[in-house]
Length: 199
Image 1: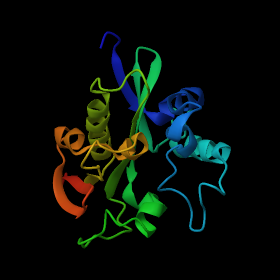
Image 2: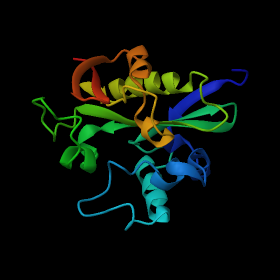
Image 3: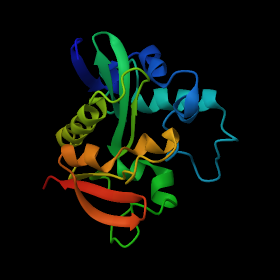
Image 4: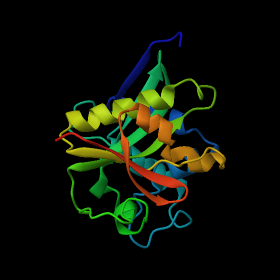
């Protein structure tokens, strides 16, 4: 990479930089990293994309460099925002806690345990993919969770790349293995749970 790579907490990025990463086309522009954060009874159809974008700006505290918390990290090449990783306490992801099978199947885990963090999304902008940025973001997310006091951090990657692009937001197994996570469960044919314990 010619330009210097920087990965910073999303609250240190401007709202405009956050919006630039997700763009105005494709699944990322519509989701805005809200898949696991919708409230009970909410749907994508019933929550306008403008609302989802506003929620992400609020969750990340974009443009608030002194904020004590944020929900992700942003990668820059030089001054260009090029990637995003969502990392926050697992219990903050209401959809993940409430109804998603993958983190819980066959495991005895306290769903309200805020000391376990989750990496729920990796996204790299078109033109910067297949350059190692996802691995850099995953490693940075693991380090960030540890620095912020997490007892453990988990990811829920897909086991194959033979999928539609939209499904790759959870990352791949090799990406998280390179970041030091190891398999603790294989709850479905296409998804695994990888984890690093810090205690």
